Length: 278
Image (tube, rainbow, N blue to C red):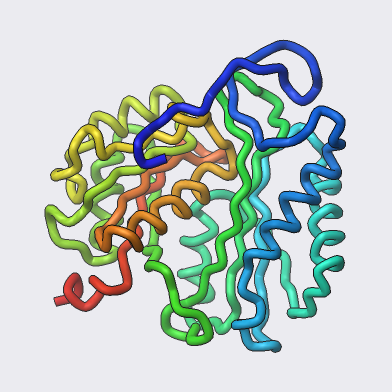
C-alpha cells in the first residue's frame, strides 16, 4: 500500500455481469457469498486477541458496511461466525458510520472501560467500477482506562471539514494531538470523490503535512479502488502499521459515506508520545 502499487484490474463483478475495473477479495467462482463473508468474519475474529482481554470487559461492536446485499444478512453471518468461535464477551451493538464513530466515542465514552470493535466491510458493492472490496477489524481502547493490551499506536480525535475548509480541519486534527510541525511523514487518502481528492491534493502541504513529499502521499482509492465504508478503517489500519514500523506520525484524510465532509485524523507511535507532549 505504501508504494501506491495498483491492484485494480478489469474483471467481471460477483453478479457475473459487466466487466469493471476493481479489486476483489479473493475467492473461488463456486463460493457462495455466505461462504465468502463467513470466511472473512472468521479470519477477523481469529485475529482478535481475546485471551488478553479481561473476561468481563464489555465489547462495543460497530458495523460500517457498504454492499448490495441485505444488511441483516451481513449481521447474521457475523453472529454465526461469533458463535462458532465460542466468544462469550458481553457485547453491545451500536450504530455508526465513518470517523464520526470515533468523534462520538471520545465525546461520550472517553472514560468507559469498554473496548470498541469496528468492523469495516465493503463487499459486492452496488457500483463496482473503480471500487475495492475490503474488510478490516479495529480493536480500540480508551488510553485512560485500557491496560489489558499493549497498543500498537495512538489514534487521535478526528475533525470533519466541509468542502473548501480542509486545511482548517487538518490544523484542528494536529491540535487534537497536539503535534509539532514537520513531524508527519506520510499522508493517506481514502474514500473520496474526485472533487474531494483534488481538494486534498491542494492541501497536501498544509499544516501538519507540510513536509510530506509527493511520493509519501498514499492514495488508496487510486491503488486499490474506493473501499466505501471500509475505506477510513483500512487507511487507519495501514497507517498504524507504518507508524509502528517507522515510529513517525501518519496523517489520514478520508471521505464519509453519509455526508459531504472530509475527515482528518492522525496516528502517532507510542514511543514518541512523551516527546510530542513536551
